[in-house]
Image 1 (cartoon, rainbow, N blue to C red):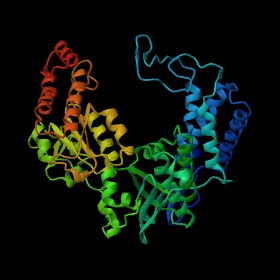
Image 2 (cartoon, rainbow, N blue to C red):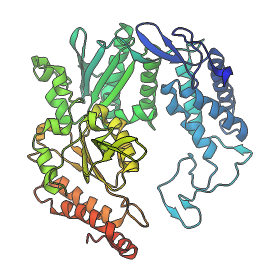
Image 3 (tube, rainbow, N blue to C red):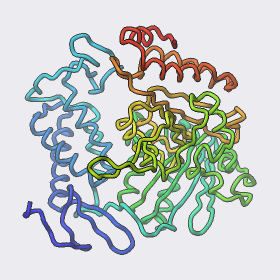
Image 4 (cartoon, helix red, strand yellow):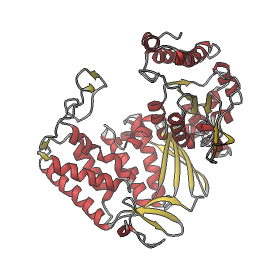
Length: 510
């Protein structure tokens, strides 16, 4: 529409998709309008005032649904606020029959009348009961928005690429330590807990160790517009940070403090879970115990302990040989990133011209494609892989990636693949010094009849159990069962419908 057109501008451009872009020569940021920002703060103050006065007050359904829609729109600009809309979601859908008193759905069950989880499509009631989490999330949103009278700029890209920090942090029963490499080199901070700290849980000490160090660096101005990669061997720390919440009040407070650092200093933080053996090799585990002569403290480069840019095949020359030992196509050639958008989509580089004179790529004859991206861009590879599955549903895809930066891609992999399994460190093709296990995802061809997919069939579940046993024993010499299953997934495509249904239901592989 003509009314939406604006003249080109690099300074004061108007909103696009709810966000206004601001570039200052150093970084590119986005923000919302001041009117929307002030309305956001009014909405938070309104609901906080009501719930603090009476935590069990009735809530008008239309009003809270309208306010939630507005806040969702604002969170498209300010991503750190997004996890704290969960209280709104749980309150709005907490009336349904498939929710507990906290608003959550119980474990997935199939109901004959309503389907999965007893979900129904009834009309919303006129009034709702607030869930306990709503007040907590409103308090978190208020704290994150405090101190900003006008809409703040949320940094998206920074030109200061040299301000990238890599760090490890660990906490033992009596001490703590962090090693962070920045423009000035490696800086190590270590110390001991007081009586109060040493009595806390290990999750508290691990998370608190990071928060204290980052807050100290923020006061010194080291985090302004910076991008930081922090590594921890505590999975709870990574999980709480990316979920934006925790059932533990102390950990929830740490999450809020980290989000405030992001919001107030333009910090882009990546909190990554690694194995304990990598933490020991890197040296931070020893620092937390007073040992100053391990890993980076002996002069080894920090980036040698951070293989986020290397794929599994680049880290192990024997891995591809092992994959070929059980793959149905012995001549498979793994995809490289430059091939994801054509060969990965089942296309060759050869052109073909139709009768109308149009040229297009020919389809490739490769039945199996191997995707082995580095952890840092695994989410991009998965996006292209999912497109390829929709385009060429007759191909088999094998996805493999080390268990690093899983917050960005593991959920999407497990949601879309037909079968997945881990390979723990220990075999010759993936030795102990690799530290983290490999995660495989297998995408099988689409079936020609109901149930149309192998996913969640008894055949797949039984195969995953067998692979889990093999992973625990670290004995991958006998891969005949996996090879047999992949042959079965191709052979079943030509079988009658009644045979397909029986085989998948009984778990037989031929």
